[in-house]
Image (cartoon, rainbow, N blue to C red; front, side, top):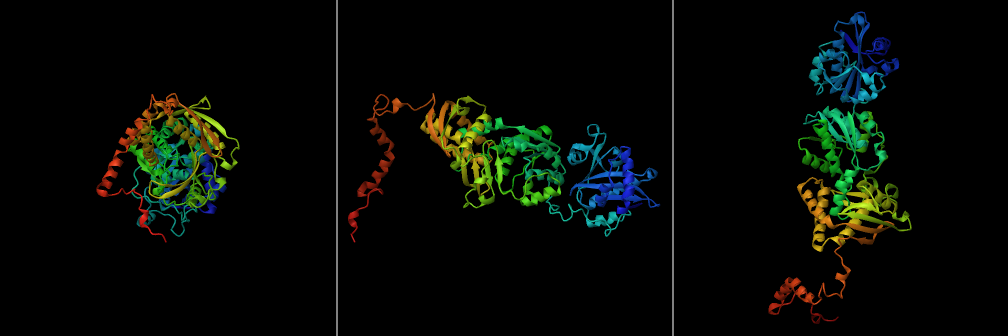
Length: 613
């Protein structure tokens, strides 16, 4: 059988054969222009009369995924084996191009099964559904079945020679070059060693450049179904516009979006605030505390969808990879974990954009963007760009959440925060649910330039990084809660809690939210908060949070107890004995030093020994 790559002069016959089958409803119609533009992807078969009796095309969605389509056999040649032979030829051509997965949508299921294809679900190939099927009038009543063939590893040179000699195919010198999107592609050498078998993966998805690129990369390198999970934790409504469509267009079978703002504030932000956790004296842990929540829901979605793996877009040198993966381990250690940044050859933003273009991934980012940002209802972080040099002052245009203190209103504003057992429940007398409390104080803080932090921090992985954070509402809530605790907690409890807050902050920063120690610390904190109820008034003025008053019905401060003239609560004469006992250790040490004519090391020097000049 004479099977070869199509030539320009073959276009009219291919067009006639394909559209004849399209007229019957067996194939999608093609135009002469579309066939000519994709001519390098067509194989044709000619009989002894040099007439085309069969054709087929190979449509590449990525360097590793392609579709068999427009397979047609002329009526006069049916039953002669032309269909099965040209299908085997296109499979061989796919292997020569290093294609790993072939699929087709067909009514002739048994025909494809004889060639080794297996029945699968159409949802495995959203690229096809998005680009072709959505334009088909039969999309809601389609009677075609998806079939798939996993080709595995590319042919070795010896296999190429052996298979090429088994049938009359075009010679190597005549064979057309690989398409531009595949030839010399910088990502064809992606590491594939020791990859676990994965059927379905849940990806922590934001719709940004990195996670958008990861979707086709997972399908290409693991041959698995990808479900995108996106958590709404207050990053802004604009982040979700077209997010589902983008995920599906990138190759996901499903995009799940959950509104977690209430849970984020109630179960993560407020407990952390009650602990007084601040990393390295400045960072209010906005990114750190969000990751365990997102990862928790990833695990839940994986279990609900029957997925056997989870994936994230964290780099191999940052903190977030640890935060995600420690949560996976704590909640479901049986799930496989895929971290593309630790596997692939993409090493820069430019690489990722090039990969996105090559795989037709819809992204809006450009090479001109310089800052890496993370946003949620608690904060907005900025990294990269001129911030890479700690000597550079952040440019004002970088800030997006708060005004500069210089441009804040010239009049101070009073805000009153009401707490019930350490939980903020009202702002200026208005009862609000947790997420609304955060959103309300965010607006007030942003207006007055509150909560800007410029920090060189110590990452968990051992290197330093510089970040600029905007946490307006969090700064206000921390200040208010701290002032109320000063009324309601005794000295020993407050001081111990302050020491414990350092450890709590470290565990949150390190991603150990679900560690037994963090949960045990939380139990202690919950106990301390039973009397932390009341209100705090704060004055907001040009970046400053100034205490303007505080009240609690459980206050340990009593004016009559503190008054020096009262003797019924505290007798000043008792101070002498107290001081003697309190300083006894210091006294004993000094007495030891002066025994036998010695001196304490605190004694003043003998200036008489020094001569005047």
